[in-house]
Amino acid sequence: MDILSIIIIGIGLAMDCFAVSVSKGICAKKYFFWLTFRMAVLFGLFQAIMPLIGYTLGASFANEMMSFDHWLAFVLLALIGGKMVYEGLQPQDPDCSKVNNPFKWASLLSLALATSIDALATGIVFVPYTGIIWKAIAIIGLASFLLTFVGMYIGVHFGKRFHVKVEAIGGVILIGIGLKILIEHLFYS
Image 1 (tube, helix red, strand yellow):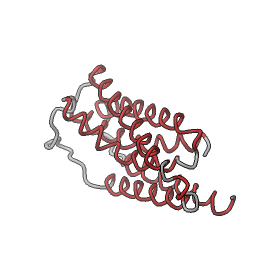
Image 2 (cartoon, rainbow, N blue to C red):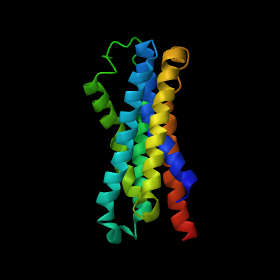
Image 3 (spheres, rainbow, N blue to C red):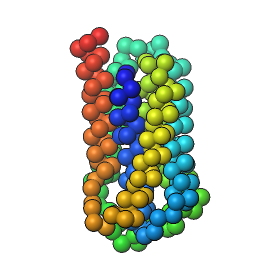
């Protein structure tokens, strides 16, 4: 797997963080740098730790997985991507009636965990590529950190005007990466 693929996976996984931060920015109505920084650090940290956990669990079964790892990567990324597409196409809460303070620790921790569950499964995708896991978790964490900042800014300043389904776009990206991995293993190995 090349660095570009890892960057694309990182951006795809960060779309959850981006979508959540846009919606929280719309409801916050004012940009708070340090509070956004705290949210971005938590999101980036959880997004980086989860693939490492998935990789560690998957690596213990690496020998058994060699014959079907490309299928597993494709299925996992397709399922995660499909879930993101589905959730991204669901109706939004334009009045922020269901939103509590997005900067409370309990709220931030639950959001960080919720947005990083898909990254846990994605960690298994990196098992056949043993030399890149540290680069992958750094890229995934950094992408989530940066896109949380950008999402919050966009949500506060432009959110009411634009209603782009970013989570659905991230899901399509992950499905595409899964398909790329499958095609590479089936036709070029």
